[in-house]
Image 1 (cartoon, rainbow, N blue to C red):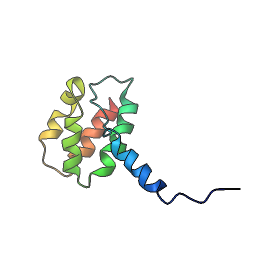
Image 2: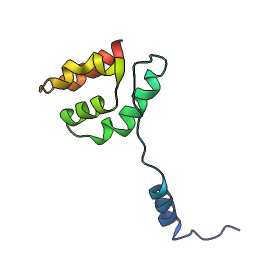
Image 3: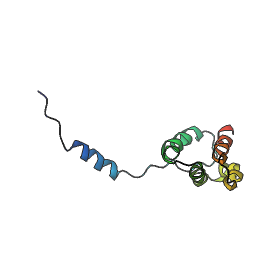
Length: 94
């Protein structure tokens, strides 16, 4: 015998999600052994939630440091529509 569906289950699941810490990709510093994991997290948590390339570029700069940031600094200063794609490609090609 199965019990009837709990009408409050959806609300409880949503409340539990609200209690979770915000998800972030972390800061990528240039270590090629962690790049794919970081890129997957960046694409999941940032890229899919941003509608404009300029916003994505801003966050790409925010979530990089050291060697990785140095590699894309020129793109961060560009104001072109394709600067984000070029910066991401620079990181991917390294």
